[in-house]
Length: 323
Figure 1 (cartoon, helix red, strand yellow):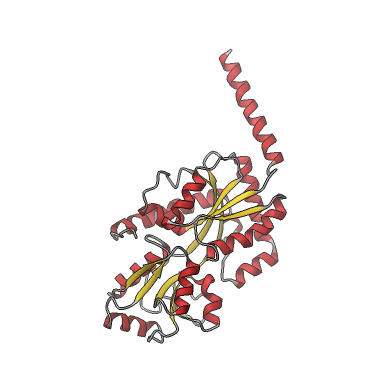
Figure 2 (figure 1 turned 60 degrees about the vertical axis):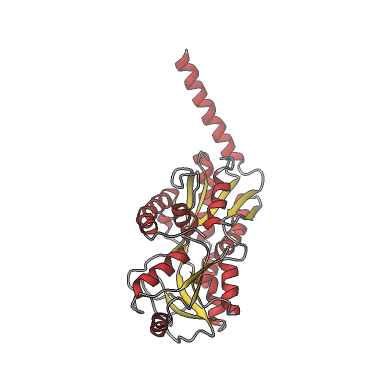
């Protein structure tokens, strides 16, 4: 009898999940962005929200939840009901760097259901227009001759921007002062205003500023030059080899979200990236869409795990102090 009851319960749950998937979504979906409004992650979320709305038939409400290297937004998403109506658009900082440093209760690899890998951007070393160095070689020379005199904007301890700065210091034997911000948008604004000297943020968010001459671009991280700014050398060309950290993004749902709902959300993302106008819009911003076979939940889960295993030991060994 117990066996029959168990079988009946499982069948009932399966039927309920199937019905839920068929009617999902029946109300707006909240898309959490763990960084400040106007920054690159927020921009990507708002670009993606429109095609998701068209595909899913419900509004996508972008909610910026900032602070603590993205982990405040991470916690907010993890505590949401696993019903598909709350997802988080995170990146390397919120899902790798931040959790390596900030005390959070969540297991970032276990407490979320991967939904889809999202576009990747580059990091680049940029400076205010009045900074003395004209190119990457002069930048390194100036920093060596003026230890701890330059200010370097980050988006918090353990962020990709912060790790880029630490790597630059270690690779060149230089020192400068880190200045934390709550997101890329306010950091870029202070760079434009000349309130800080340097940073190493998402290149897509700063491309318009560089093209209009409001900031200088010294070098770009990653393999090969960046297509939207081909005149900017790579860090390897500038003598800083091995800096292959990229500004990758992903979409997650809380742990326990039914697989049928994850699949429906994933399909909406995949459909959005298949659209030619969407692809061109992202390309214009310097964002690279992962291959179709890399847009799956499984691909995001595997990539996230590999990045965590690679960078956590490096971050912890760096002895980074929280802001």
